[in-house]
Amino acid sequence: MRIRPIVVALSALCLVVLVAAGCGGGGAKTESTGTTAGKGANVKVGLVFDVGGRGDQSFNDAAYAGLERAMKELGVSQDHIEYIEPGEGGDRESALRQLAAGEYDLIFGIGFLFSDDILAVAKDFPTKHFACVDMNVPESGELPANVVALKFKEEEGSYLVGALSGWLTKSNKVGFVGGMQIPLIKKFEAGYVAGVKRANPAATVDVKYAGVDGNAFKNPTKGKELALAVYGNGADIIYHASGSTGLGVFEAANEKGTFAIGVDSDQHSAMPGRVLTSMIKRVDVAVFDTIEDQIDGTFPGGQTHVFGLKEKGVDYVYDERNKALIPDDVHAKVEALRAEIESGTIVAPTE
Image 1 (tube, rainbow, N blue to C red):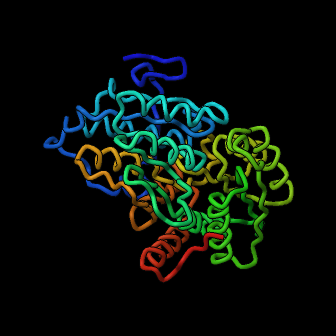
Image 2: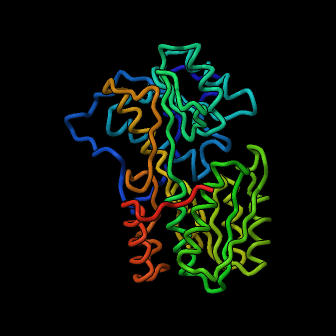
């Protein structure tokens, strides 16, 4: 396999990505059996990671977990997968073009920052298929036939961890630390605040953001600074939606002896004992399902696929590692709210 200057071969990596085992479902499609093993032997997949890259223990690692699952369950060859770590600015488009000009059939852009670049590159490579996680879909709602938008109802999972925070806070003060101030992250904030208020109308939510550009998702020092300020004002739980910036939130929680809530992947291992739970955003499911669609010849070009609680696209972690921190009666109440969201009785706000 050719290794280009900014490309890393999957076979050279040994980092194990941990994705929640107890977060309420393994994906929108049933697990593959021996009858489907190897069916993806000929598909070739390229992927460009978001700001922060692999090892963020969050968004990008979840995307990589989808690639791993495709190799394991669909028989996609390591030699047929290539990914590019993020650069700055225009590197996103050049990375997509590099893959599209190569032998790859399906190319992913991981993150909303790829939205315009995906559309531009897809126009120039009409025979290739492209998928964008968290894509900003044009106002017309129309997408090219070779592009699929993969989106999530982050507000639904955030609502559940918000309610959990509202029932568990002892100070009636909790916090939210977001990365970049954009509508996408505002969805996390809105769902969380609504969930807190549903569980505990007397509770207040101290909201902070790390910045207004992509660097806000990769600044643990800023995350710790913001979290220390929120904890210093009396909050005992902070939920972050800030990529690797959130690692600083965990450091602050550990320093203050308080709790934090992770995002996107199961972040328990980032600070065991201080990560109360994590709001899981199943980017791995979206990546895996899209690869399987490509293999099956059913690539959903021109469509927007939305993953919510009902579709097992978002959830929260509740397993043997954190259940001692969540009383049974509180867990039961959160699960009751899940049922109301899935039935449509509760509609979590997005702003």
